[in-house]
Length: 472
Ligand code: HEC
Image (cartoon, rainbow, N blue to C red; front, side, top):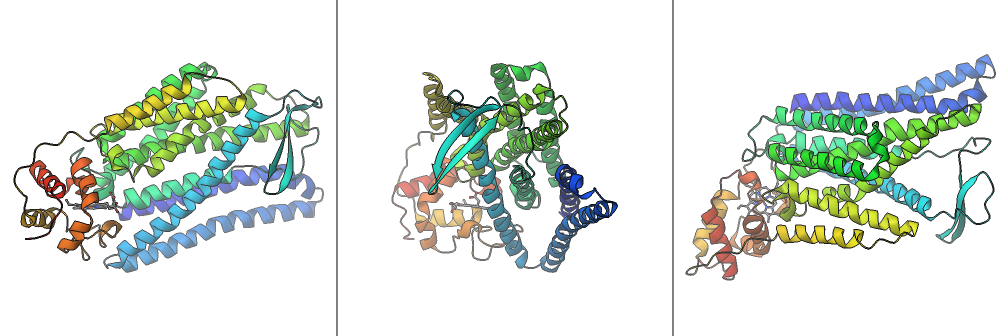
């Protein structure tokens, strides 16, 4: 845990420095030209740049140091669980907020592209325009065929949404999964590996996934949308399969999401933004620009658009144990990804005004197939009245290490999700959820850490079906 923590902090600081550096080089386009007219101006620009780099490094460093100090202070106390919970909450909150901003912008620009007026009353240099009304005001947007003759000084770039969504997602991956690898990442029933090795496999898979995708996108294959989609989807399914064979179901899903998120953020960082910079530079200098550069960036942006629905599903999948708790969780994941990307495709066609008869029904069929595949098996017969005494002792043996007001489990120092089974009433009150997690999806006890037996699950089912009474 300590090793992972330190490696993690070094990594985050490294990423922040890289982001800062690339940003400085971008600011150059606007600032230096103006400031370096005099030697003094150049000096000022340089000093300001240095100070910015320093502060953007020092602030995260300070935050990291404070967190580390707090961590070592509360390490062996009951407050460690509390600290982790609040870090989890704060980062998650940030992550979804900035993620919404990113995906919102992505949806907006794809909509814009698809709905531009490209024919009526256009100036020569324009590719299209669009009138819109929103929030009590009228907006008029124009898209240029290549670039305006003069690049405006104040030009908005959309990139921090992507960078910070990815960064906060990676931080969450560490806070939720890698720091609790033994209980959240590794499921000994799937593969009994050390937490460090599991963490390594997770991180390495993200890098490997990006390298494969980036390589694929640089081959002529990218010009053939259909084959690119087929091969890309196959490779993603292989990743899903791989994750499901080394991690717990939930961790497998989240890694699939993290992989897609990495491809999306990588597209922005390594391809789209550099292409835009080159575009701006060429327009400024009036030099030749390979049109493929902009086209390629557009294709990567389109890939990101198709990734949105699958990634959003993964982000909420942890609430739906019938998905990640399935016997073949990777197949369910692949089905949902395919069906939802299909729906996105339909919506994109719709915006462009193209008719398609098959895309929507096939996508819906795939999703319905998943609903069908995840349905619970037909239960067996229940014999006589199951007594609560039996159920009570099963719950005591298999659940209360975690689900108690004072858990004895090393990771769960507070009852997970506030669920505790200290009294018969508490058990009765939760019986519907117990049915869902213990009998139908069998995702509790977590990773079956306490070794619950199939007969015990059956007993619990019969007890609930017979009305969950708590008379001893
Ligand atoms: C190793 C610790 C551990 C054990 C043992 C365990 N649980 Fe859980 N349980 C958790 C965690 C962590 C969560 C929250 C994450 C989740 O929903 O998967 C949870 C969530 C739940 C939920 C969902 C609560 C909600 O608000 O949705 C139910 C129901 C549940 N457990 C029932 C049980 C039952 C019944 C048993 C015993 C048969 C059991 N658990 C054993 C760790 C455990």
